[in-house]
Image (tube, rainbow, N blue to C red; front, top):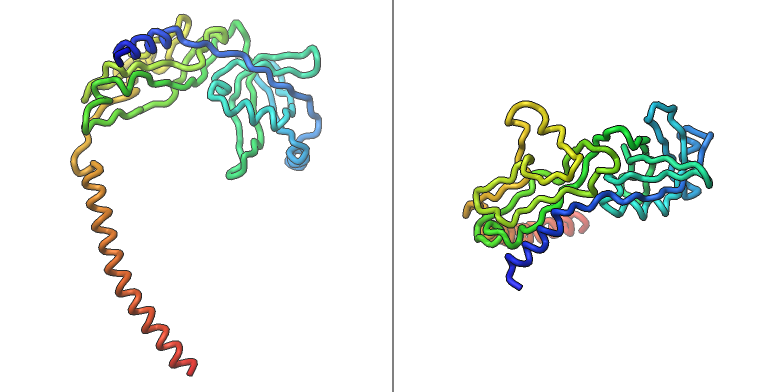
Length: 255
């Protein structure tokens, strides 16, 4: 099968955009709040959480860290409608609004959920997936780089219409081309609020294909590295002599 045929099949698949799949998160109510309580919960393998919005009061929750850490590995977790389940009977649809991680440990410190209603339009950021890049004229051309200017975009839709991601087809991109935000194929019921603002400035590039100058290419970089390496080598010889002289001085002082 030739590349163009492969690209055609891939593109036709992605034109049917996969909608968000609901994920269930098991939670518990918590009454003990504050920094000290949060530290105790983390030592027990739990994550402090809060759910708010939907014209109701915020409620403090806890979720199991291992379960949450597993779910956040999936890109779709942050653009999906989640089922927050407390006990046997209480469930609430929500989306992730904020999450804090430990600066260097694989630990989730806190997570915020926002309630959603099936009848209320929601604004949420979803990832952009680029397809067809390797088979495009720009992708095959020497000295041309395809740049992804955006990796996610904010959309507006009812919860049932929120896609897991938006697909951007680059298979026909040539050197010098740009794919604009308005070029993204949107599923029914989905809009991009940024494009509803008057003025062409809001239709920004999602990806572009640019020529790379020779001075920016690998040849120039390799030459610069070689020159730097030679300079380091010459300096190294001088420094080695200096170290010997310093050692002689130390030995004279000790003697």
